[in-house]
Amino acid sequence: MKPIVSVCIFTYNHENYINQCLESVLMQNTNFDFEIVIGEDYSKDNTRLICEEYEEKHPGKIRLLDRGKNLGMCENIFNSLKHCEGRYTAILDGDDYWIHPLKLQKQFEFMESNKEMNLVFHQSFTVNELTSNLDYFVKNEKISEGRIQA
Image 1 (cartoon, one colour):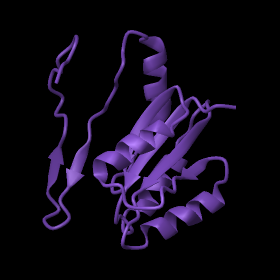
Image 2 (image 1 turned 90 degrees about the vertical axis):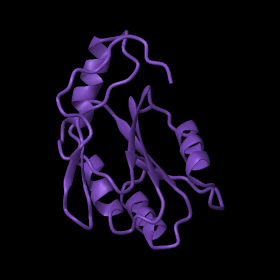
Image 3 (image 1 turned 120 degrees about the horizontal axis):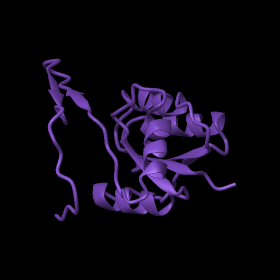
Image 4 (image 1 turned 180 degrees about the vertical axis):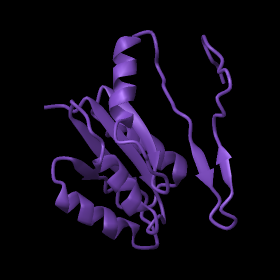
């Protein structure tokens, strides 16, 4: 059966982070099927090996893409997205992770209840590895509504 959501992870040289990233997706509590598609761009560290181990432990849930070479960031993203089979796609970088086990469920329910919407995102924060400073992506500010063009 096709998954409802594809979680597409883009990763390159993230061996220190990819475990936490993948565990944060695997902890998701949903009432629908989802797949994890990993676009690992032939890292120079052990990222690929770690992803292979996860794929072996979770057959049918995790698909590690094998393109035979390093594609570069943009091509890795576009190529990885082409392999997603879900009705919806959630994007996660290999050095990021989710902290709420209902993240996918809540976003899915919102999208299903608001068919006119094409995109949903959430507040996030970044931690600077060197300084431990926090920076928020969305600070409870009003976000523009309507058509957004870039």
